[in-house]
Image 1 (cartoon, rainbow, N blue to C red):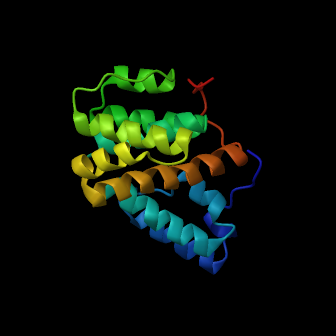
Image 2 (cartoon, rainbow, N blue to C red; image 1 turned 90 degrees about the horizontal axis):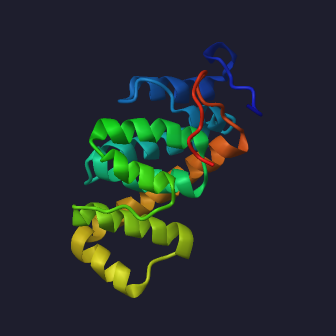
Length: 181
């Protein structure tokens, strides 16, 4: 870890308000990158709120949201993000073979066309830096405008998370070994 994370007793009033808001939310604990973001309390407040919306209040169930998050974690080789969201993806019901394929940079086989579309959009955003007209049209047809906006939001937000975790070299919990090479 490159950054000293503050304990609640070391936080300024602004930092403590953001910290307290995060633990009172649905997560029940501060998301790890927020502890780094607290160096900019207002950024931390807004980023954490956006994260809560994208995590809990999109049109997608966890099983589908986690596809975009895992593609993002894999793209950035974000060890901590992969560790955390693989567990959430499994808990949400995502097929372990799909998770393994994303980890190993293979295109998974999807039974659900919505899952496939989320994967295709996330991959295209990260690798192609956008969407072709054909993929855009298909995504609008299958996901709707709100769904597409939310997949883009998931990829963007979890890019911020991955960059934060990577830049400050967040460690995995003791005893955990990264699956990403």
